[in-house]
Length: 102
Image 1 (cartoon, helix red, strand yellow):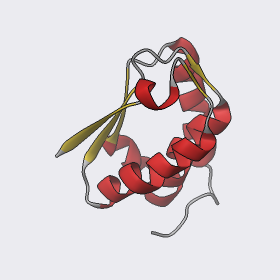
Image 2 (tube, rainbow, N blue to C red; image 1 turned 60 degrees about the vertical axis):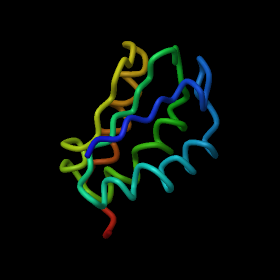
Image 3 (cartoon, helix red, strand yellow; image 1 turned 30 degrees about the horizontal axis):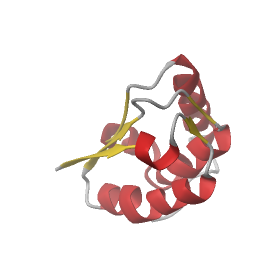
Image 4 (cartoon, rainbow, N blue to C red; image 1 turned 135 degrees about the vertical axis):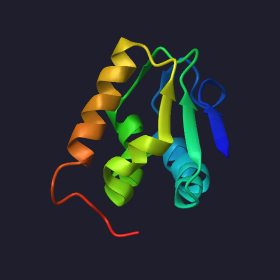
């Protein structure tokens, strides 16, 4: 099963609310990944975000599931700025010593 989470209605064109991101991670992203389900984060309409928001969305899943999380997480319609932030968070979340137990 695949779930698409459309981010624009939650964050608008600039995503910076880490509390909403944390809630989304806990209620939507982590439970689906735990079941082995695909999650698409749809950035359509989102022009920018803070690194902290991207971290709040995806760092914990990456730390729990490691590179396997990248087989289940997809990032749709991310512009170059968002892709850079996503890549940065992926890179440091997968550093040795960052893995959490699930």
